Length: 68
Length: 405
Ligand code: HEM
Ligand code: SF4
Image (cartoon, rainbow over all chains, first blue to last red; front, top):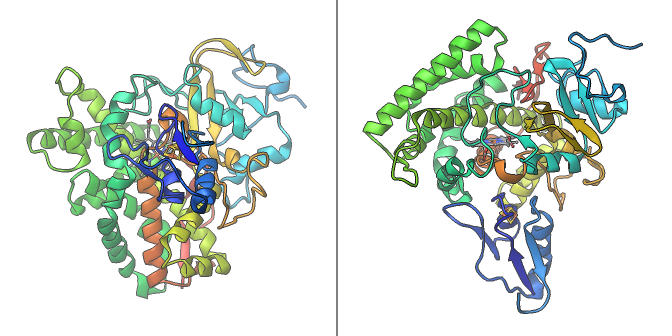
């Protein structure tokens, strides 16, 4: 599975980074989300979903399948 | 009985949407200022209503309306918003400017407040917390506001601005008047004093820049390679003073007040001392339940919004504590659940003006609590609390909170 961010909407709350640092971090300039490895396996699914649901801006989305 | 208002409410507001509500006034006998707002919900008032108090303003009660209010800057502007109205009011950078211009100062400040930048402050914050707490840990009690909650964020502010610790008493005195005084003359003088201090600070940093935030603001260049307008620089310093002191003080007051009266919660946090992730999750729930800010907006043009007539310059209040306890969004919203899994609270706002200091604020609170629990694992509310020590307004909180151990 794959998680994608809409940077137009992200305001840098970093709730995603707090909840799932394996996938999410924030950049050092604007403080917006960085997803270095958007693909994740079943072992992280629960954490990623929790991060997605906790984004106050609704900036994160899980895309089915490999491609965007 | 119909209340008689003077001056009468504006004629675009229908009578059924008028409610008598003063968000500065804590009803007698109340010992928790957020109840000023939750009482309203219990009164069963309309979800969007108008009160003629404090110059007249609208109130949104629902999470969804509050969040939309934050996001819709085309209707709800942050420019010149004080309630009751004061005009002209300093155009605070970046908070008092609407997108897209607002992005100039927001971008300038952003690198200094990212989670990464804030993590680098950890040691300094720990040192400050340890030193301050150990100065009274063996005394058996303290006034949490005077002895800790106002000093800690003010000391942090000095540090961020590259000012020496010796100036703490001066800054505490300035903020005491700024946040608490209701005397118009004292307030006007205080504003002059604050701007004089900022003027001197930025002049000095302009000559001798260091690695602090004030230097970064004053040495930043706009897209034409010019320094930003001097007034904007001062107003940005002013905003950081306004935004980062009283908010942290009163959030801390709420957190410690809750822990002082809830032994299981203290135990729960002590158990998490070696597990920063679990500690942080629990702090997030305390952020939700203790939302001290009520945020102002100004309507930009006459319009109909959600079936209601709004007029240009109408004021609106977005109350974060109401949003954070909306039962349509939060399960069992009045209950503090330190393991709450989904927690989209708006304590730090949402949308373009989302609090830039949220990571710093949370770290200040987290580190303070960790150090406190290490030195003072058990504490409770003292019996002799001062009467009348709570206040409402744009930031709600306490002027005194006596603890003992
Ligand atoms: C618990 C403590 C805090 C709370 C509850 C809080 C709350 C808020 C809220 C609700 C906003 C949104 C204002 C709006 O939409 O008009 C805001 C904005 C802001 N806050 Fe905080 N804040 C806190 C601490 C801090 C600290 C420590 C700093 C910095 C030192 C800070 C800096 C800012 C700035 C710069 C903005 C304006 C951002 C913009 O307009 O783009 N805040 N804060
Ligand atoms: S939680 Fe949402 S808004 Fe915040 S950094 Fe992550 S993606 Fe961005």
